[in-house]
Image 1 (tube, rainbow over the protein chains, first blue to last red):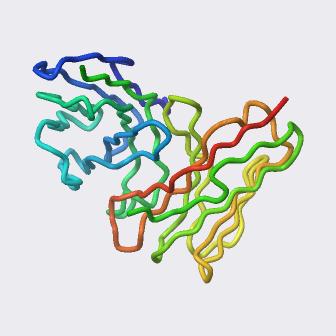
Image 2 (cartoon, rainbow over the protein chains, first blue to last red):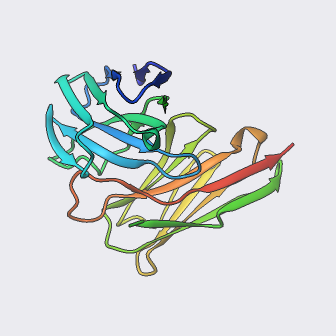
Amino acid sequence: DTEVTQTPKHLVMGMTNKKSLKCEQHMGHRAMYWYKQKAKKPPELMFVYSYEKLSINESVPSRFSPECPNSSLLNLHLHALQPEDSALYLCASSQVDMGQVANNEQFFGPGTRLTVL
Amino acid sequence: SQQGEEDPQALSIQEGENATMNCSYKTSINNLQWYRQNSGRGLVHLILIRSNEREKHSGRLRVTLDTSKKSSSLLITASRAADTASYFCATPPSGANSKLTFGKGITLSVRP
């Protein structure tokens, strides 16, 4: 199974809502990532988990809260978002090779299209 | 700041022609990766070339890497309409254990 799945595919939420994005992989990858992508822009790294521990937080506002409950699952909890947070949120995973994660290809999910009203 | 910069930013070719895309980067790297993204979808890894490699092939793809010029090129031969997509180069800078930085991307349109 070489697939990364993300749910939901689309999400519309108000600024006072609390919602969660989910990501799952069964490739045995021990690194998982959240990216944010605006239209016609490259993906921007938000968070990296390595062996279920948060290893990188790219100064993301606290209204985004990641969680890695186990080696297959990655969540992104959303609370009090702003309209400018509307974007495609991509999850990815990769192997960890001799402690290095970025030396390997990343497998991406199809993304969640988030609209904040 | 952007590590990789692709060139051109947009490319339109006829089906059957070859497409060449270039990427320049700023710092030392462990490897350079190319990804494809169809409109509004997730990214698909195409090919990875390590810093000690100069050329790599995968099917209709050919990637070169020139570390002295800090540049890479992606050649797609005999293009198809299905190759229409955005293409990104991505680099993990040396010493940056976990971070993959993407270039701005190239939009390739292949006309049937």
